[in-house]
Length: 244
Image 1 (tube, rainbow, N blue to C red):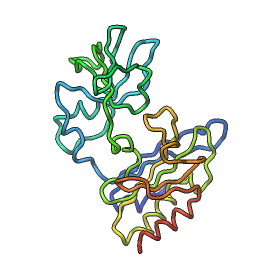
Image 2 (cartoon, rainbow, N blue to C red):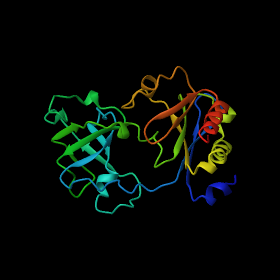
Image 3 (tube, rainbow, N blue to C red):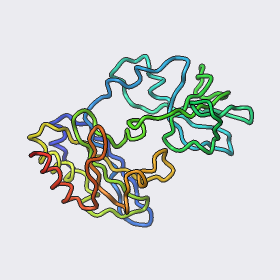
Image 4 (cartoon, helix red, strand yellow):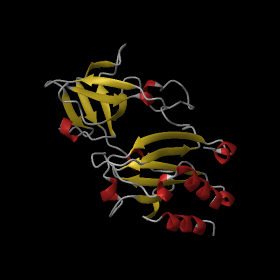
């Protein structure tokens, strides 16, 4: 598979192939990205270990937290995005609360939830959590995986697990290249990503974006959703309208 046009514009291409449950098809979960985040991790404090979590492992009594940005808080603006995990062990004495001080439960923690673990880690990537704080999240934090960077746009194909995608949605390269060709004269950078819908994510995108059925193609800028359809050609027509 050739990606000459991607190399020409110095885009980062990451491809993960997921086998669709119950079919012989595969879904290329692909992220075309273009920028290193210049601001990430520069606002983290040493004594406030903040990361992203998901539901706890209740059998082992461990809350896994991704602390990559906090861990690299002294690395400068051009940080890389390798994941770094921390296992926060807890017991009945561990305090679980919301940022405003109200009582919370471990059952309130969904995938993508921003949390603070007290105390922060020492020499190990696991430790005992005296306190787990569920932090308030901004719109940008909740929609980070869907929003475009800078003045560009992001095309998002969202589907349900095990769903068979039509060819025009599944094939990453032609979809991306056609969108990039349409918007080439506008100077807008085009990103594209494929996301499996997860009802247990911190945001229920199906509800918030009023998606009636999957799969669906969405278009986002850096502020929010611009377009939604189940038809890729309608999406291309929308992009052509952006040139006017």
